[in-house]
Image (cartoon, rainbow, N blue to C red; front, side):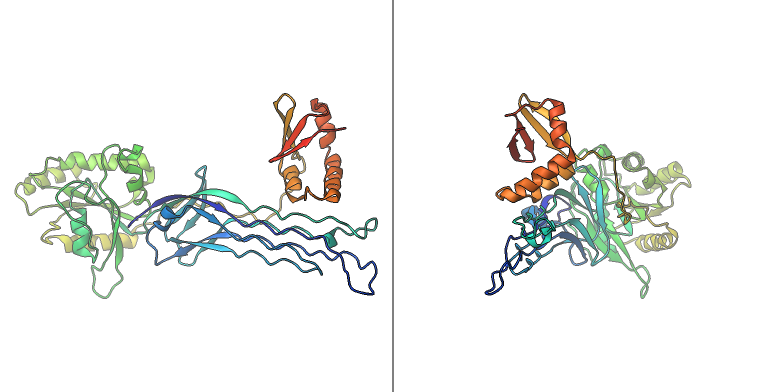
Length: 425
């Protein structure tokens, strides 16, 4: 079963907690701290796989969670790192975030892209030794792993795309020139998913991949029918073959069909019209097709080359294939939307506010900010020494003064993430 769109939720592994421990060997008085760090959480990666051709696996399973890191142990033993998770996807998969921003474009077999980073492990009490405190009872919690909603879109990778109205004969054509076996019937929208095949116009030479793209209709560019899902698969094709139904028994006008399809392509993506396009005037074995062909040639002029064919009998198909083959030799590569590049430079933003204070309702205040939220996440709130350390850090950050300046009164509730504190002087 072909499936070309999925929405999944992923959660990288949390880091393991650091440990508070001390050396307890006999005859070693005051052995000192020996709590190990927690292991990092497992990350989640997308990996291209040439043997996959559909996103159907992501239809039945939509939640993925990587393994968390192990907690630190005594005797300065570190916890083991969580196992990374690899999600295999077919080539041509575009990964986007919930806002539609591209994260990755998987086009190569074995290509690996990080999509969710595991949290780092918390530090054990060995890490908090100072000259003033040689036996700290403080350890950090592990950092939470990244949590995201991802949108997966599959765009078929093909050199040539067969486009045209429903029932124009695209499936019959691809079944004749390749080993593909699409469903063929005499009614519109027989094909609901792309069919791929490899054509070899010259024996012994490399062939090219043809995609039979499902039939388009007027309004497809604005999403009518399954328009966007159909048009998406044409984005990577370098050459388009426009299949027109020339039969007089058809109730369609090939001239009008030609303009409708090209207009939908232009509205969906402007650069479609810059790609080489050939016209396959199909069903030339039927009565009245010759007259329609003359009308088409007069209307098209020299804008596009026209090849009269009969996909049913094979008439003219070889000439069309050779024309497509020669066109591909000079067709320019497709300019794809580039995923964001990772910037290896470190930029320090010194004027970024460490926190933002907002009053949610009378007596309830919400504090947000990456630095303050990270502090709360890493603090073991059940440990009195860790709480005292967090309080000192909050004072150093200026949060206490800022709360007073905002008008916070003793007894008010201060919320940071899902933790609520009662404010006191």
